[in-house]
Image (cartoon, rainbow, N blue to C red; front, side, top):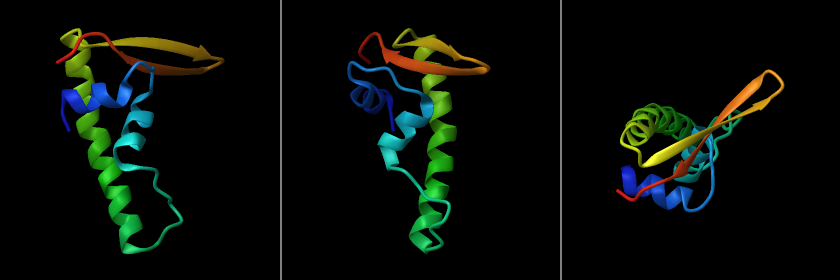
Length: 85
């Protein structure tokens, strides 16, 4: 996972960190008790942790912009592509 992967996933859209992670490895189900289900949950956790650092680095280097959307008490942060890697 690198800058180019994130920019390819974003394209011309805005997405949250969770949406980007879902595009990378797919959705997981907490009711899936198979080995593959547990591996997918573990992969999701690892991707989310690495992705958070990557997104922050890309925002700091002006490759991504952020847009905060307030919906009542819930605030979501959306990322969008600004500049290529």
